[in-house]
Amino acid sequence: MQRRHLLALAAAAAVTPQAFAQGKYPSRPITIVVPTAPGGSTDFTARLIADPLSRALGQPVIVDNKPGASGNIGNQFVARAKPDGYTLLLSYSGYHVGNPHLFKQAGWDPIKDFAPVAMLTRAPQVIAARPTLPVNNLKELIAYAKANPGKLNYASSGNGSIQHIAGELLKQLTGVFITHIPYKGSGPAVQDLMGGQVDLFITTPAGVVSQVQAGKLKALAVTSKQRLASMPNVPTAAESGLNGYELDSWFALYAPAGTPPEIVNQLNAEIAKILAMPEVKKKADDSGTAVETMTPAQFAAFTKKELDYWGTVIRKAKITAE
View (cartoon, rainbow, N blue to C red):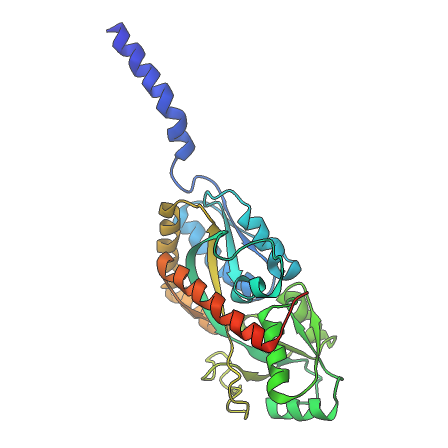
């Protein structure tokens, strides 16, 4: 009897540390790293899901902004984090599938270093102008830029970002010359645009819609096929006479490569529920973005397809970040 009791204690001692080590996910706060400064579309998307995800999982979900190096600092941080589901990346398409083609050594690999968790939102771009710029639509902008070569500039959230690509494509399609001014994220760029330090910013609607509605910025055109519900009076680029100028951004959640599939699937399932909430969909719609869901497998295939597509776009536009 005593021997059986000792064996039972020994067995319990052997399995208890492992059981406690594994535990139930999540058992502590989760951090979502945003590779841009606060205030932009990537930051908006992280905060769109952070609170409802916290309530769903029963643990705090913290948004941690790590801007710099066109998103590479934040991406590197998550790529090197422990793959335990407690450090996640809110990724932006311009960085995730653009940077690998723009930097010789970005310091991370979009396929090898990350486990796709969930697609979140998709958005077109809006061509926003400082309020004092003497143009009110895209046609007037092109005419003004041609009459004043080299006088205008445009902001981006960093070299090689989709805003940078959008600006260079606009120059190629119209033949105008506009100087590129890179920033460390959308938030600072919008602030300087409102202050008149820069002339233009081509970005996702979430970063500028409230300023446009308040009259603090001008929206000249959107790069979608249809007008946006949040900006119904703003024409598309095609309506403005510039065909072929259609650009789409997306925002999504990744984990470090090697994160257990059960954790990835749990996060994906909870996020799908969150994106289906009417209040979340409305917030996204009001910002000019649209929620979109995919399974981890679908999202992995989508990431690879986008990586190939944007590589072609960037090579044709001859854009580099270095």
